[in-house]
Amino acid sequence: MAPSRMRSPLGRAIGLGSAKDGVEHWWAQRVTAIALVPLTVWFVVAIIGLAGADRALFVDWVHHPLPALLLVLLLIATFYHGALGLQVVIEDYVGNETLRFGLLIVMRLAAIVFAARGIFAVLKLSLGA
Image: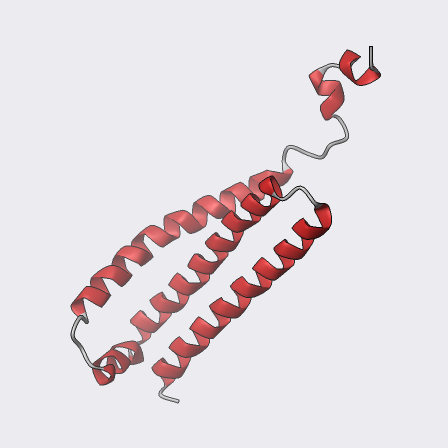
């Protein structure tokens, strides 16, 4: 009989990492999900209200501080929440450690780039540049 079969589940789990490591990640996912609910509802209502508007009216709307701030918060929460979710998928389903590490880096950089571009666009419209 192999030595690993004789060990208890606790004995096999010891040394595999702390069970507390995922708690911060789990909470970050839940907090961003909760933040996304009102932000998404606001965004959908605002876009419906702007349906048929021309670019000038949209830019005028983004010039106000509250819509600009809420758009930036929506972008941050969306891309952070998405990155957290994709990280879990990559860690759970990509077996090759080198590929997993590379995908995590690419995914995180893509999330940062897309969020930054979106925030830059909102700021550019809101500041009138």
